[in-house]
Length: 253
Image (cartoon, rainbow, N blue to C red; front, side, top):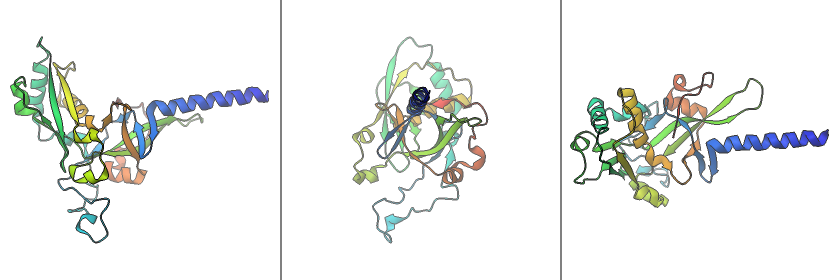
């Protein structure tokens, strides 16, 4: 009987490990999260470079100027595209669906203090892309929740953790930034397959472009660090946190 109990416990342990691995993979320096909530994701994209990790106390680079506000300069994801005419963008994207010609556009990541994707000029670029979607804002840092595991304890369901991920700006190249960041490009295939009916769906679609630089294609996840719940609440707002009491909203990627 004792042998059977041990075998059952080992089986449960392997199932538990498998459930963890399906949503995250531990890596030196953080975790590769494979599913993150988008609806309450917040981002930071301050215009200034910010404090330098190697700065000595007292040096100008030791603090950010200006200092972050009470919410750490965090903003909801939808505000990332406030400079883009969403109606015109949707008309541009949807208007190409009827085209029988397939083509590929290239966006190059510009790692400035406020990062963005810049459309590479080619003769095949649709005019509406040059007018409306030439520059796609990209967050410098994101704060989000992710499902980490499902507990085996009674009345203890989905467990959500708070995480952050960031894109190093060019001024931080002394940190031995990986080549993937210095020459990163996004390839967009046209026509798109998505059906965009309103601003919410358009924002969700553009978000997949803006967040693409955070995604490691080889690991199939976003390299992230665990964030204390209190810090997550400061950035996202306590009312924005998903408590796991309702069905889990759609996740990305």
